[in-house]
Amino acid sequence: MKDNNILCKIKKSFNKTTNSAHNYKKYPNLIKNIVAKRIKEIWHTDITYIRILTSFLYLATIIDAYSRKIVGYGLGKLYQLILR
Image 1 (cartoon, rainbow, N blue to C red):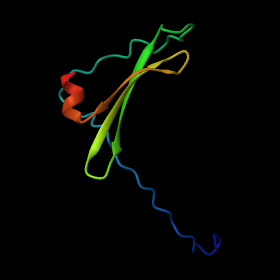
Image 2: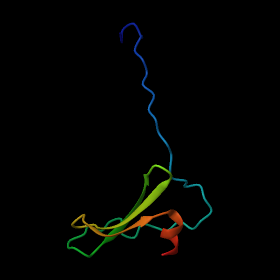
Image 3: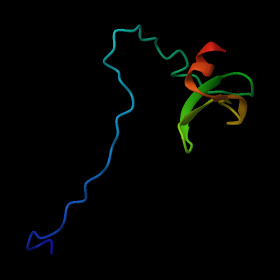
Image 4: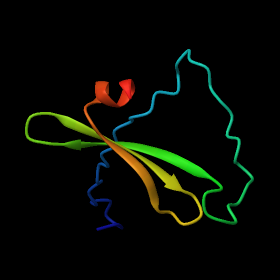
C-alpha cells in the first residue's frame, strides 16, 4: 500500500485551549531550574473541567511538587472558583 501511495491519512483531532496572544501581563517561571528536595517546598496548581449532564464543573488542585500528592482542591462552577 505504501509503494502504491494508497495509504489513508489519519486526521488528528487537536483543540487549542490556551490563548497566549493576549494583552495580560506574562509572569516568568520562577522555579524553572529548581528541583524539589523535600515536601512542602514547591507547590503548583492545575485546573481542569469536568463535563456533567447539564454543564461543566471546574476542578482546581494544589499539588506538592516533591511527593506529587494533592494538597488542596476546589470544585465548583467557574464564578465560584474566582470569588473564593
